[in-house]
Length: 108
Image 1 (cartoon, helix red, strand yellow):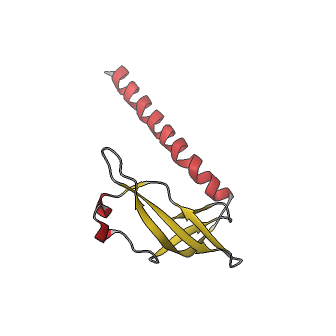
Image 2: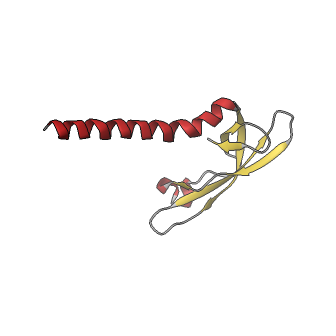
Image 3: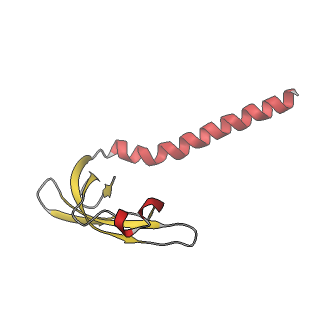
């Protein structure tokens, strides 16, 4: 009984530590390189259908802090609610962009 409780506590502790490492490492970069949230617009929202899922890719445009126009593309995102073309955002729809520099920016 004591061995079972000790194993359970050890597994819980390892799970918490693993979660902290996996969640902390990606956000550590953001803390070291703080950015800003800038307005942007959708250029196109295109399909990236997968076998068991429905994914979309958003191409976007934004103006950086110097006024230069930049374009980017999101990673494929699972969005079953956008399966119907009528639900997809139209070109020109407003989006928010997390902007670090002219090479690193992501649609939120």
